[in-house]
Amino acid sequence: MRLLLGMVLGALLTVGAAYLYDSHHAALAMNAPASAQQRPLVNWDVVAAKCGHLAKRARSEWNRLASSS
Image (cartoon, rainbow, N blue to C red; front, side, top):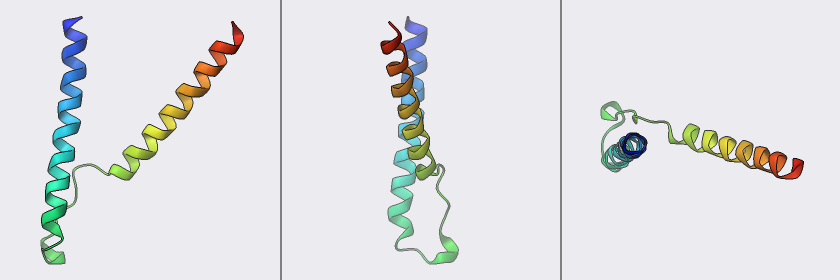
């Protein structure tokens, strides 16, 4: 149980750190010239689309399982 909790906590910390890094550098990039701008670590639009797809699939699978009982 501790192993699973540690894995989940580690994943959350990793994603949280990447989000904080990207949001901090996005604020700094607004004031920087175009040549000095850095790309973000994570493409958050893709992450949002994949999470939406995962939630939709989980919902449909749950509905399938619940209706077959």
